[in-house]
Image (cartoon, rainbow, N blue to C red; front, side, top):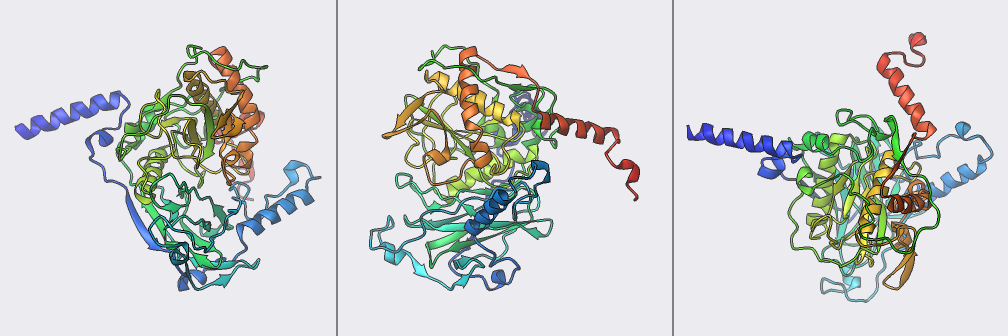
Length: 497
């Protein structure tokens, strides 16, 4: 009888947590914790080099070819232009890092020297003449959860790391993985985590004549949790009508009307802390199963700037994938890089939902680990996915704008102005690339920032968004979706032709 009573009490407690929008599994710790597999990346894999495309041209050459192709056919109407080679029309081609690994006599953080920390390895050559210092075999994610991969090493040197992914049996072109090595941040050096949602496999390589000391590929299995679907259901998109909680597979952009913001005029240099900008819907850490921080976060008295990121990796994720992706990123940051917590202060998904990132309190100002050298006084918000050739859906842009408007208003900061961080004058709303050598948040997303600054300032001025229709291309997507749902798909009558 005691067991029955205990089970009943547990069920009631779980029901109460669900009613509050919290995942019961996260609260009770009933679900499996993420797992990490470390694979040495110090030389060229014999089986890996035999995979077709392993020696394909580098990301730098691929990007240059794509740009040349775009310039060559720039006179053609946009509808007639084919996707750039290797992009499949969607995936971004990241720019290579500007700092190849170097061998100097400087002291390394682990007590040795740079010369000792870097060792030679077998090499091969890419189609465009670059030396391959290390190449992995095929890295496959878990079957039932969106995997996270990245590369870490010991020592302060940078490395030029590239990744390609396999989807439906076909390999993508090689693209660069950004590094984020902060000498003030404890832990290992390494790349940004890469989400493999919807992908079959990945392969990674290091270009250059040498490899960093103890370089390893980390593959994270974040595990599926029983509360993931509940977390998504209760975390409604910030924009009304952007994506119904029950319509988890459809992009947020396919909704009816979206909450967009008309550009405003010149804004004041400061915003009153009681300006009336309401907090958007933001789901707390418990809902996605965040692990506890290793220590209490450092705090800053005021947020001076918002830095916009993308997480890098697949855009082909479902709403129910998002909590697992967040757990995977946090596990990579905490266990792979040795950080105290997930680096971003807040994250947004392509459905227009906002998620609390780094712990410490949404209304407080915990110092993140999202932009080397400029974490103090900045707020980092990252959109899950890659946005080099296409920007996030409007519902996601709206959510990011509302979040930034609210967060900056708490510190009385005008989103349309400029500020100085560590001696560098920047826009209050900046992209990651403005403060580091990276293509983050992607060309297409970065191009949206000028308009976003105006929109965010307008939100601060008016205290909230103005409702208007979504862009015409999103209305077309909605119409196509309605035709599909009704069974009247274009070409249905000649399907057997």
